[in-house]
Amino acid sequence: MLDKLAKIADRFEEITALLSQPEIISDSKRFQSLSKEQAKMASLVDVFQSLTEKHQELEGNIQMSKDSEEDPEMRDMAKEEVLRLKKEISQFQEEAKILLMPKDPDDEKNTILEIRAGTGGDEAALFVADLYRMYLKFAEQKKWRVDVMNSSSTGIGGFKEIVISIEGKSVYSRLKFEAGTHRVQRVPKTETQGRVHTSAVTVAVLPEAEDVDVEVNVNDLRIDTYRSQGAGGQHVNTSDSAIRITHNPTGIVVTCQEERSQLKNKNKAMKHLKAKLYEVQLDAVTTEAAEMRKNMVGSGDRSERIRTYNYPQGRITDHRIGLTLYKLEEMMSSGDLDEVVDALTTNHQAELLDQQDKM
Image 1 (tube, rainbow, N blue to C red):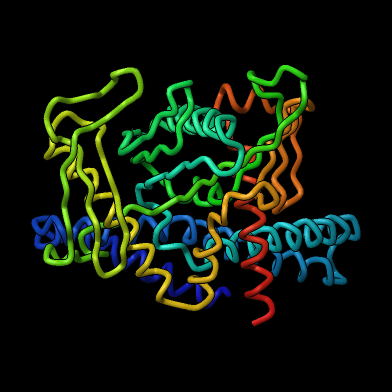
Image 2: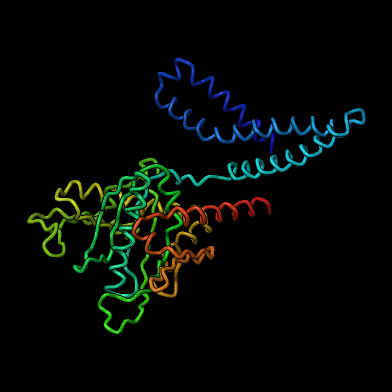
């Protein structure tokens, strides 16, 4: 491991030298590329330097602890230092393992979030709105920018579906584990007998495609315009500003009617389409990735779930890692998902480390 870290440290120093050269400074693309590469290495270089120092300290204390001519009290102190340093070195090695793990190339990308009602009728649609507000609060905490790309209102405060674009730092890395079926258990407002109903909502998390990721042939597209519609007269236009784009080779259809401008709706729809096509492209890379992404959402059935929101008990449970928290109302109202997201991320890292150890 130290050899690998040493090579990274050498490359870090090489980049540092390059970034001070006038020809690099004047080439903005090259300068930006090298700066990004250096930034990714910074944490590993810090760990390498700490490990190097600890190993040097360890060697010195081991020699002192075995030196028969040394004062007995000093030898005992050296032995205690050996134990402490070995523990610290082990901790730094574990940190290095995590930092050396292959990074998801999409982690830093902006994200398109699709939230759709599954089984449960109006109650499922109302929970779509609840999840939307929760993610909106979470985005506000992170200072991310949210833009509604498309929505279909039920007229009673719910959504059959809502699609949003989220832009900011590390959006995909923080949201990618939200993909799947979210099950809600609560007494609907329309329930007169006080019975708890179970409904389901599906969430898809798509990394936003960049121009270099996806190339779209305009000849493969069918673009239709139609009059936008909304509940209670909201967002209704007298012109055909809503856009529907069909990608003929894949059959993917996206729509947008949120803006009064046809051009803005078209741009949003294209962004959504590219994200979906990027997903298809990723699916084709490996069988494992294809299977994972194909099962991202499931059918929206009550029996399929990654997470359950139980309102009578005030409980939120993530079934993938067996995490249960009794702070449902607080999480839904504040959007503070960090505890859940951090636990899922830690679990994912542990699985990757386990795979590395088995290789």
